[in-house]
Image (cartoon, rainbow, N blue to C red; front, side, top):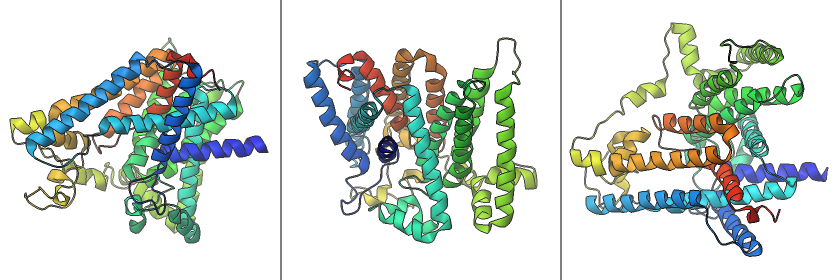
Length: 428
């Protein structure tokens, strides 16, 4: 019983990390991620001092250096363009905060489990997303429960779309949550593909059930979860595809087929009897519904996105940007046309980066995530396809929004750091 409570506690802390939210009474400046970062920084200092090792691995030096370069470039472009939008001027601080928070989570898992691995971290990330989806569904069904969960979050609740009756969890909402769900679906798929169903049928079924729950409810929370669904299926086929060139229809594929049939039957039943689920399902799977009813794939948000394709009109903007990332009318030094939404009325990630600090800044952001990926691949070669797919999800996600999945990479980067500096793990 004590062990179970410890596991639940670790899962709760992991959720505070993966889906941070502002705490009541602390304003918009303090969230759960920042608190964990402070704890992680203190834990790191203790580990370093007790291990008598103050060295810094080359991988993390390069990652920090790249993030500092991006911050310096952001400072340059805002000064050159005479704007006060410092969205990425402190990007290196953001990277360190995520890594510090991840350090706290990883060390806590080590304390409770006495060990750490890709699978253990993956299991916690998957469990958190499953619980978030269940919580989101219960919030939509039971308004009293929904009000209670909302009361746990401080300022910034509007961003959770609570006022728009959009389904959301505890800190999990909109496209940022969708990209994280997508990344976790890929992790879930990878662990499923690596499972020997002949020996660990139960584990495989659990992973498949988690994949179904996150796919189904995650898409209702954020339709960008579809990216992870498709990527997960592709990754599964890549791993399961034998050298002979055809899929092996063994026990695993039988269970997967049964799971898909059960999911379709369950979704069909809920669609018929529950009007609330019907509306949410039609929203979350709008593209699939449109394809079934009209014969063509059509999603309202994608139609809006097409209207957000706005190209820079000058070479200067292409190279160093205009220095605006957030909504410019909120800045005291903006005297341009007042428009709703983001700068140039585009929410497309790639374009927002270009308009802020040009192609140079955009390439810098891409290089940062390539560095994260190569670091993980370097230390965990067996999981190469997993990290490459995570990188791909991040790059695909920027087609729609400017959010990233650094928080998914962070725990694995901390594991890589521990491998490079063994003294930090010897104190487990």
